[in-house]
Length: 479
Image (cartoon, rainbow, N blue to C red; front, side, top):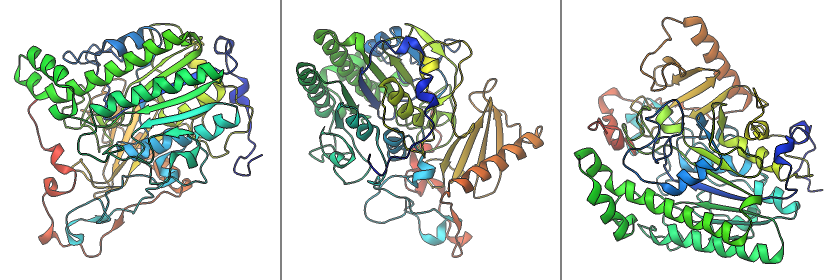
């Protein structure tokens, strides 16, 4: 047995509902959208919230996927930034525990372009290379006889995906794709789909189960979409609001077209009935109003930055269902391992839980995790004028702790999903208890924290919008 695997209790695997046990080694196709928020597609993510879908973007293939499977109305990305969430998806561990809380900015080091004397806090320097000591879902499935592939945006370091269990890949790509260009889409959007379809066909011919992950690249403007897609979207844009969305909408509709190609290939190969298709995203869309009705977006711990779609279709999942069971990126690793009936022990440090009972429609299903709370630790200056912050979710409540001021904000998400009514003053005991629970979690995870900047000079403090990544958060017209 690989020494990096540690034997742990396997109750989560044994508890896999019978409805999901029809296939001993089903296939998996995991599609990771880039900056696709809760309401970025034409799929209504919450049956009770009509606004949880776009009324402008057309994504018929995602609609087809959702109609055949389950939507998670309360699913959260592990981070409001791409690298941390990708690492969490691969490992089942939080960015906090991995110390992978931000992205690689290349030369210059810290994420803020303002001077060291211009910020109250000094953010920690995060790990930007996924440690090879971490067990990935690909490594685990390879031991179970699966063929593994990753096509698209890697962005968890420069080490080859092959060193992390992926037999086939595009290499250790970043935002520029294999050719390191400014606009890898639309070429790569369709190229990854083509490579994915070829991979699936070869595995079917060889009689091997497979795990295929396709990770999309970012795109927000015309050069990132096919000309014909952009023209069609532009033609139906009638309002100023629609016109502002044309570029990002065209990119999303291209992505949807590639999903359609993958779904059609599964049908053609005759394996749709024994394949789980999982669609989610690394974080919300960028912009203060880009994820309405949720508040804010990428680079913030507000709901718009971290609540994202999760759609799962596969054997044993009732079609057209919607669940309000809260789930996060780290839950996908143990869920896939359970459905695949992996016999190898799981890593002892997993933070996610098996969603199998939820997917099988078990009444009042719950998810067992090492920690009941879900924490997004983001000790960095990015796109929120409040600066470095952490959020903790437990039950219906969410607390945000702002590190520059020490202030906390408390929201009841069942009544206030757009976070407009801070309850910290009217429910001080509840706020204090959650804040302490957050502190305890961060201590247990040996979290990296922002430190007081001894050189901070208020006279040299720069306006927020001059900070790296901040310009996306100035007030925009309502969308």
